Length: 126
Image (cartoon, rainbow, N blue to C red):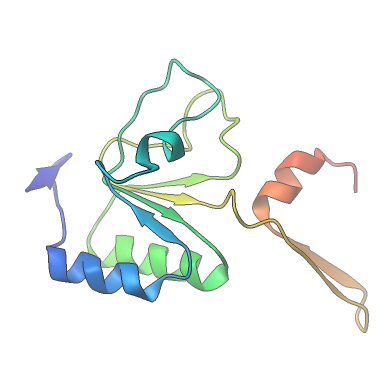
């Protein structure tokens, strides 16, 4: 099977990838897929083959590696506010960061780390 002229990985490969995630892998027909692919601009109606709802950095790394290994088109979703709809793709894989809402502070070197949705929502008010 192909999508956008790219071969979709086989079921055993997809199952192995799914079990490697702390977050959720959604595919067309799965409960929650249609909700997860919606963004604020309702005029955008794209249908990715995979949505990885990342629970942490390891999921992001795994999703990038999976997409690279299988030559999948990738879109990154923070909060889904991009009006042009670049946080979704037809076919391919969406790396959904919307569940990653964390702040980590290293007080020894006075550095803080924010996950992508928090940075996007802060709008520079840090």
